[in-house]
Image 1 (cartoon, rainbow, N blue to C red):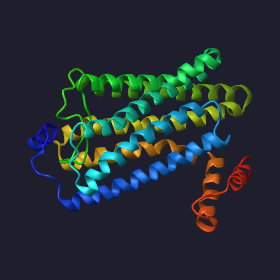
Image 2: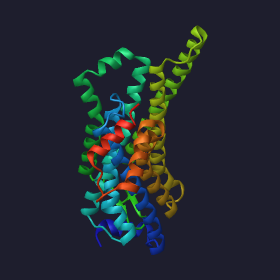
Image 3: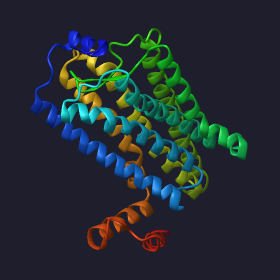
Image 4: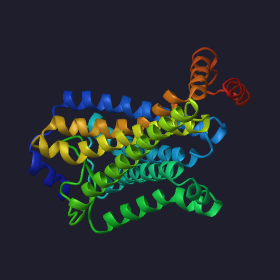
Length: 323
């Protein structure tokens, strides 16, 4: 048994029962599989259709990539530990857990760039137009990926490793020397979430003010273009709320519950379900995407051949769902 596993054993002593591990593993397998399917579906829509607005496509693509990266660690190390009782040793445990950290950070930074983008639309439209010039827009939308990579690399260089703890069946920084990251990571998570909350609160107040002025002035509702932006603000705020819940559960739920097994299970479930939020919100708020999803579902259920849907058929579905 390597040093990390010995450390986990010293902290928790007994492994979960096989029945508990299997039950939790099956639940996580279902959550992971559904989330992967939903995110791949959104990725196909982004790459093969124009159903998602061009102005938000980079943000959505970043969230999809982050979610799939995050979920890859579930498939590579978490599920084998839960379902097969694998006791992953270092450095494999560390290496296979890296995508979990990278995906989480990419989600956190992307939700913040989304909030900043929405803020500019409502409070500084001219700045938002300037931001969308080719080079600035590429840099802005690539910034979350750069920051997430940089932070993940530095954390692992200084020995702040994330691993799967087989005694609690979830990811943890326990038994790692994280130094200043022990306080920095929770502070970052809550700072970004707090800023996002303030930004969206300011936007909602602005929307109410705009609506009130227009109603008093001309008796009309918010102009159509603003209705679309309001809809996007609601979607993005829901994604940020889910990210906040995932962060809160990971950093505070285990300590507050005395590091009980159940708290680790909830933390793992909340973190993985966070990756479903983006596709679920898009499906819920976009009628064309719902139409395409239903068309694909009925086609796969009735006329699927060899597990593949012909490209021409897919394009017909897209055309039928574009209004």
